[in-house]
Image (cartoon, rainbow, N blue to C red):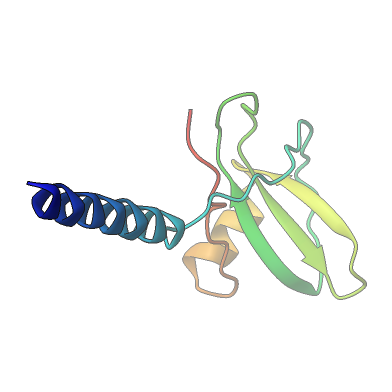
Length: 101
């Protein structure tokens, strides 16, 4: 009986370690800052962009863009000029990976 309980203990310990390692391999959520105020101003020389979707404690929908001078702006999600550039494929604005509401 002691051999069986020893084997069971090893099995359970191995299973727990495997579950811990598997869980740590998952995609982590990155909590990005929340832009509460966005405008519709057209920005030139966009270097990067991501979409800020509404989420818990952050209801603003917008596109956070960085220009070539490394200045960061938030553009309203309803802004025609940025939505046009995205739909034409001129810029890519993937959504942030924060957990939703």
